[in-house]
Image (cartoon, rainbow, N blue to C red):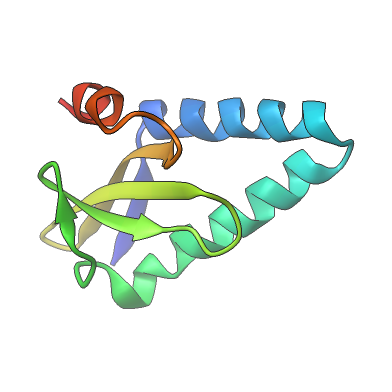
Length: 96
């Protein structure tokens, strides 16, 4: 099993990092460490998460973010990493 972060997901991570780093120095690094840990859990648990808007959705453990992904054969493609506090209509539009 391989995990591939698409460019859109990498941008989401960078946006989250910048947001939390503005809140407190070093919090952005903690955000990235936590999210990468959640993403790495997909090596074991890919495909077991509920479907939302046509994607599997993994809820992050320490931050209010969701990781939207699809499993295609033996590759986990991460399409988006979005803040759960956003309007669900915005999330649906972002994923379509």
